Image 1 (cartoon, rainbow, N blue to C red):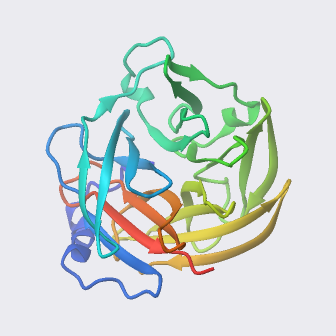
Image 2: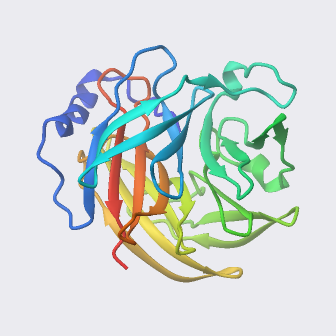
Length: 292
């Protein structure tokens, strides 16, 4: 989601504090790294996927672009980012995205390598393969999603089933519906609870089969992030726990999340922030571990 309320510089001033603050105090926090680059298309990263070994990544921007790169680590901490050129996404007909079509938010990569992207402004899901983009069929329920709060999170499980959810549920205590596309048919197998002012912004299935959901809260001055882990059993949630909650202002606007297992066998969650193309924000990678 593009936070259009971030125009007031006085409110955003607090967002610059973590850049020079001490490392966040958390048992699961591993590292953070600010990714800097030049060019008008750099920024706004809203979705993230990593390779199984955590060394390669693909990220999408809510300005309708995609980029691939490598993550360097020293002593287990992120120490560098290298990437190729940022490329513009195209429509299923091969044309350029219009300004109102660019709001790419969710990214998931299928077992066959297809890059599936959800868009928020006009809710839709496109699958990008070797021959370009293909528009996936959508259920009627997507037509009633709130403006600028559409399909924010996207994830694919090991069977190839696609899961997505909106950023807003329609009420402060109303759960978020989770939709699933499996065997060519949409269903809404379960929902996740809403609490603490947090809204879902990213999702990924981990190597343990669990669904990890990244959530964000915005105070008007700073961001707070939370990650919840869900064990899915068929059409129901079998178990849920919160594995990470940051303090306000610890990190920037974290929106993308990817789960993978390192050489020591530990599941890591790598997250990326959306800087809203604002000079007072930054693009940062943040990494935590999952305590099993």
